[in-house]
Length: 101
Image (spheres, rainbow, N blue to C red):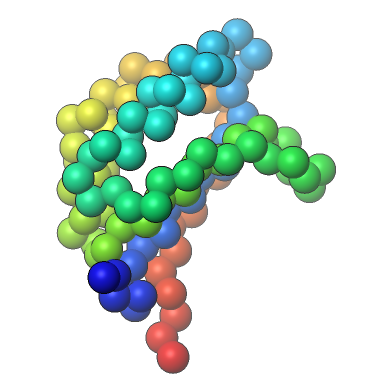
């Protein structure tokens, strides 16, 4: 069970470069859900008109240690270096933790 006050929700909204292979990119992104500590992983498509992002992803971590372990994981680091940097044109990353009370 997650402790809501320690839980971190990691969210990223992004737009792929026109030349990116969307299916291949999303498959590689979805594979990150297999890293220990990742919970409630979701791939999203933006359907609004308030920004220029086309996709999103969200995942939950039980605490800062789980989040840090994910960030430092070799599979995550390789994805960022080999896929994200090549295929993503623009993004916004947000990490939220619940306010007490």
